[in-house]
Amino acid sequence: MGYTPRLKEEYRSRVMNALTDEYGYANVMQVPKLEKIVVSRGIGAAVADKKLIEYSVEELTNITGQKAIQTISKKDVATFKLRKGMPIGAMVTLRGERMYEFLDRLITSALPRVRDFNGIKATGFDGRGNYSLGVTEQIIFPEIDIDKVRKIEGMNITFVTSAETDKEAKSLLTELGLPFKKN
Image (cartoon, helix red, strand yellow):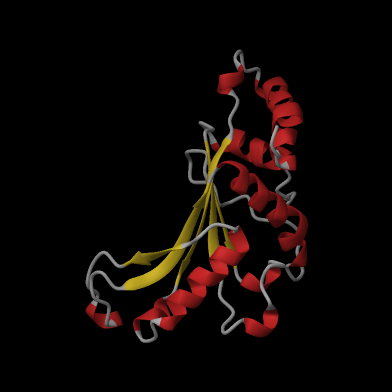
């Protein structure tokens, strides 16, 4: 009997029942679930300074609790002095226990630290039940020491769900606790 994250227990006990009541699923396997969370960051200035990639990988590792990887460019872009194979970003894919822990920290401690926060926009759905959210500052996460930050940078957070439609995905994420704007 190991440790189970709070949000995973809440999904099993409350969220599945709420979504079944709302959409009338006949089987529990039809209920949408959160499959993975991808946290990524592009660093355009990394073409000139290779150390920026290492700092970014270290920050994403601290934020998510899982080792981040470098992403490399797929083609040459002469105007940006970019060559194929150069490191240009960092990303981490969270699944299982770490995914629920990260989501819990994002909802309870990181998003409330955003200045003038009144909810996240509901326009980030892609039509297939996935939601993308942009964060402009990494210092909203309590794991980041502000004194050690070299540059304020943002990141993209993508929630991949098994939902068929955006409406089902929004219901799932709302039940899990993501604070969407009311308009």
